[in-house]
Length: 163
Image (cartoon, rainbow, N blue to C red; front, top):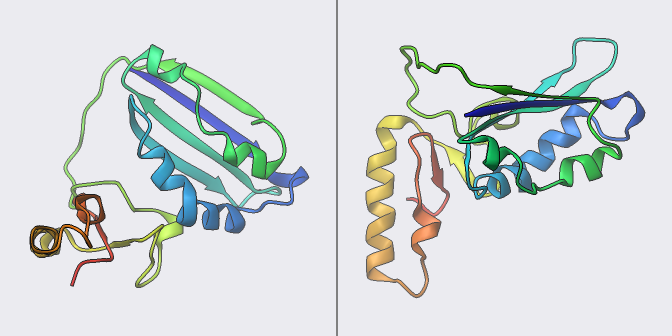
């Protein structure tokens, strides 16, 4: 496994943490969910210093996966390459005890009631199964109007097609 950390100092950019959160909501999260070999991507920000910073932490299945061509839209929006980029081998992994089963859909861009990120809205883990089953039944009864991808689910997110 390989971990890559990148960040930008936004002081020379027209972009802000707030504007980049909008980018996450409308575009970035879904596009990165389709990248092969990416186990986890965390978008990170710092608004407490003298200049805002924006970045990401990537966890890759392999060093080869970390070398593939990647979407570059954030860099294009910011207007210049990251100020910092580091890459590390993973020596060991573990997971602690936690209440929320999935990390998808969490963080600053999804805060607030009813937040929708590119068509996805947070739901409780307990509701996910019920909503997904109802949506899957809609796919079975009307396959031409509702696609299975519309109803795909993780433990923390559900497409807004649900009842």
